[in-house]
Length: 402
Image (cartoon, rainbow, N blue to C red):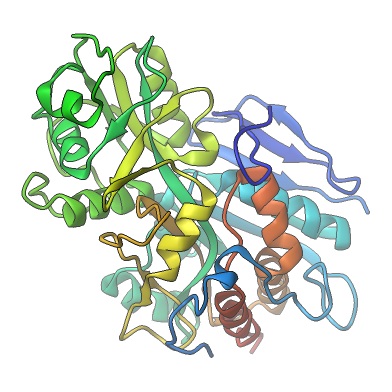
């Protein structure tokens, strides 16, 4: 089903995406317990500069892997690797698996969208070859990475930039505007009905019902929750007094597991409101958020403009590209309720086959082809050219074997 801008497509929630590739076909099945899975059984040192150096770059071209398709100079790759993590990345990774598998017919990449926290945990324990995470590694996780990565480091490689939509189910209301303080009050449990004066002040002339508000939050350890609570804490600190966290930090509302569970819970109850990667919002309403003096609709372009205002995190390992998002930006058109999602990998793999396959797959993900595939399938914003080039440098520095 075609959605809004940038060739956005709706992604079915709670599905298993199993790709038997003849170029890029796909089939949807019922998921196993523990999260959605994308798999392919195919048939045929970075700088610390600003991640985006110009407005033109925020929409645009990336640096492609030199061999195309994520292969190597010696030809297509083979073997099997497993990734676990971010459910927000699911639609993008599905597209990457399809494109990478078409160019590497003997390569098998699987991805289980259990959530960011589960992904990092399994990766650091050696249960996955890479992790998808909407939050960068904590200092304690970086320390664990030295053991997990055969004496190398675990690093965050940005691959996916996307808006987080505040999604709602309120029959009769198709246009909802929320200031940061109002959004914070709703999710903190302070604002309890849809016709509360604070909401009506954001929506003059709108006919808002007296329906009770039912806020929904993620029950799992979620990078999307980390990004969302970072926004609330930064943009409305007088209201949102809890610290940003990957586990929901306040006692309010209903809990639902993973992105698919969040969307399903909001769809199931009139008066419900939640937050999810915009690509997976389905037919739910999406609130406009006040940025400066304007209300901004969630979009890939708005997320890219917020990224352009952001800076790298200092003190990270060589090759790590963690980004501190500017949640307070008032740049025209910027949408700071957004996430940068990372693929977490080792700088050193003792298994050369797996290491080369991780390098090839991630190189495809950050290539121009891979970023355009993600934009089409998930509605994400392509990485700025400067950030894509840094990501490729980090990926190419991964060593394998020995």
